[in-house]
Each structure stands twice: as C-alpha cells, then as structure tokens.
Image (cartoon, rainbow, N blue to C red; front, side):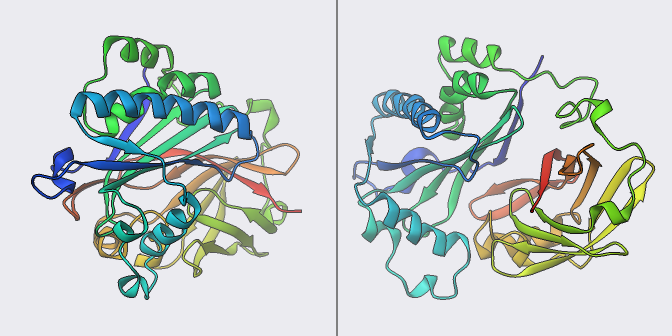
Length: 319
C-alpha cells in the first residue's frame, strides 16, 4: 500500500518569506471549490473543516495568522485573472489590496467514480504567483478526509504529527501491479475492439480541458480553459484508444495551472500530452490515463521536469 502523492511545485522560500521583515505573516483561506457534482456541498464543507483545523494548528506552531475573507468570491475572481494570464492582469490592483493577507490557501477537489483528487495551493498575494502546491489521489471520499490534514502540512513543507501520519497511512491507495486508472471500471465493462466511429461526437474533457470534439476519421479539437483550443489526433491500438496532442507545445496549454511566466518555461520542458483510454461498454465514458509532466519549480523557475508522470483520467460523452 502506498499513497499516490505528488508535490508538483517545490519552492525554497520559507513560510515567512512572503511577508516583509518585522511584520506578522497572514494567510487567507479561500476554502475548496469543485466542478464535480459527485462531491456534495456537505462533503465539501466537512473537507474544508478538516483543512481549517490543520491550518489553525500550523498557524499556532509557526506563529502566523489565518483569516477567512468575507469577500471570498471577489478574491477568487481576481485570482483567476492572474492564473489565466489575463493581459490586463498587470493593470489590476494587486491581490494584496483585495485581501489583507500575504498569502492565499486555496484548493480544488473532484471525483472520478470513487477516486478522489485533492489539490491545494499556496499563492503569494503580491504577485499572484503559486509558491507551493500539493496534489493527492485517494481511493474514496473517506480516505481523502483522513488524508486532508497531511495535505496542509505537506503544503507548508512541515512534518505532520504522529496522529496525522497514522491517518494518512489509513488513506493510502493500492497502486502496485496496475497502472493508474486501470481499476476505475471492471474489464468486462470495456469495449474489446472499439472503432473510431464510436468515438465521434462531443466529450467533456479532464482537468484543464473543456469540451472535446472528435471528428470522423480521427481528428479532434479540445477547448482549453484559457479560451483557446488544441488540436488532437485519435487512433486505435487494439483495445486502446490513443488521443495525442497534435500541435507543438505552447503556453496556452498550461495557463489553467500556471501563470504565463511559468507556462512559457513549461513549453520547453514538457512532453506532448497523450491519453490512453478504453471505451466503456455503454459508450458514455473514456477511462484510462493521461501521460503528462510533473514539474519542480523554485522561485518562479522550472528546475526539473519528470516526463514519465501519468495520472488517472476520465472523459464523459456530452449528450
């Protein structure tokens, strides 16, 4: 048993580095968001409470303050302009003027079948840059709930207390002997020999993608969160459906996750994206893995890229 846990962004800055010398460090917790209807509002609230408890404990230990801003929606809206490389972002008021804090703690949770993915970030309000990020994959909601405190300790690069480590151990996901995502559907639920004609139509993509359109003959187009699009090619390899990025890397492909200054560096290091799917028997889901890149970033610079990284992915047919 081992957890699928990836520290995708590692920064050498200590926690106090986001504040001016002599001032008290303040972090604003923006809570969790989810675009997944399988995570209920009550589940999201309970998960947020677990994170809040850990944040308060860490704040006492590290001697900083935690606040929950009343204008949370406005802060999230302003943050999106920085993260999506809005050309007017430089002309907007700094996040520090929107929320009285040195840093923001925010996160997203989503669920594919039973598997729960939890992502949390620490963002500097002066520049809107991501300082630290943590990503965890857990076999169900209860395991994610147990592991939530450890995610916050990981975000601040702190060693969790023994009781948190024990909960994390209970939340580990079995991964040995099978690729990520291979157990999301039982083998008898897949189409053994899919045809391109069965894939024609519109699909809801995974993280970073909007709707994906697959045309007869194997060409395709994916909407990106940046508002632009990416060309795709689709082919069949026995029971596998292979979907590839069919154009050179460009910053637009990474702006959903990074500010523009980092996205242009990712372009030089990341391999082209590829999805390896199987088609569910009812024709409504593409289930498998996305082959992508795990990055190490220090002080706004990409210092290494792991092009062997893959994660679970599911696309669903749009009726």
